[in-house]
Length: 155
Image (cartoon, rainbow, N blue to C red; front, side, top):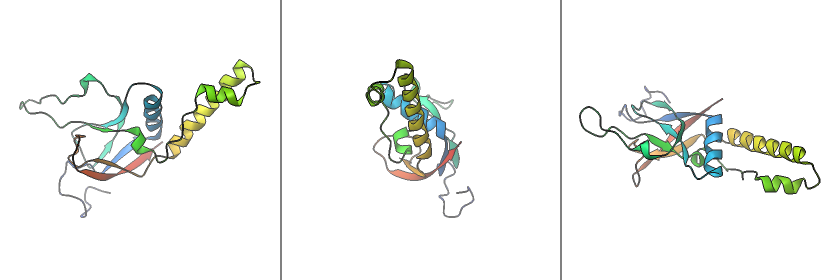
């Protein structure tokens, strides 16, 4: 969709589509599934019609800071990587790949696990959804109305 599309809202700050790199989606999803951290794809203000989402680990620095006028700046939009992947495949655990190769030596098991993880990452990269729901206000707040935006997968 383009900024000049007459079917679009007149609101120039409304996000109509986001671009995500397939590797960023796989990395964020893997980090979220494999650790106690919440890793998201983040779209930061000032918003424009087409935005690029980048990797971001949520933490204490995610609060909106006041701008020069003393008012809170628009909050970044955080997109859960699970929302960007249609049919998230189960992550290959070490115990599973070892059980699949009980007679293999340690190096062979490591190699097969590495191959299973790379296969998982490839499946995730190929399963990036064509759209995702974001909060309608573009601020990533909770409990609000949502809007569907297009997702362009890069890479």
